[in-house]
Image (cartoon, rainbow, N blue to C red; front, side, top):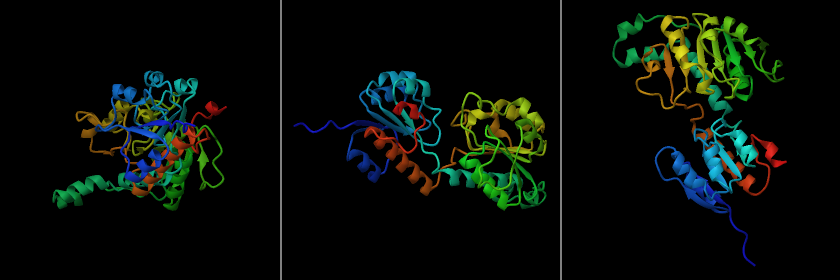
Length: 326
């Protein structure tokens, strides 16, 4: 009797040896050996005979890629996002799409609070003066602001939004939120629901924590920015496309907005000539929301768990389009 055929997996991530061993124990594996992300043609070649794909949430898996992968059963994303996958095409083709929510909640929430504090106390500006030895100028720089007593507006009160609220509450901030769900979770610190326009008008800090969907693409544009206080700050650790970047640049240049902190951008990496890079009232980070040793390991393990469960015909722990299972 012939042994059962092992599923084939294409891995478009750098993995440590122990993670490779987990997959190789039950699957035949092809690894992408190039730098960065595979090109579209490299991805199509990689998934042509694959039953499963393990890749970054920044790896575009469009309808062309899915059409070329006739055996594909699962796309397992390393990341909480799933907007990199054509979800409609995947669902129609019976391909499960998985992600890694939950395990990166604390890391992103910690970073968000760090950005709030950095904006409030003008830390990047002060650091530059100290590093350059310009102590006198640093001593005369514009003063920062306290966060205690300030209003934090959270847009999207999911796992990460709640974790940010917990941290902000500990710092004495007043919290208001906007979400499709008007009632906050029971465990959330005291916070009040507001319509989006009202939230933008009262908040001293506005923090985005939403998935990228058609209704959230460009959620914060020119109109919304004009509603914010000129002393307010915008923080985005969700998805770059939720903010109209050109409108944000205009608002920052004109003084309609005091500053912004962005871990995510419309285009990543940021083009070197992008006007955002020249603005002194912007903190720019290279998408490091989950970049801690503990979080990245937990994300890796969950992504592999999802992949292997799907290939066994079981329900993965984190599946986006569960309707495929039925």
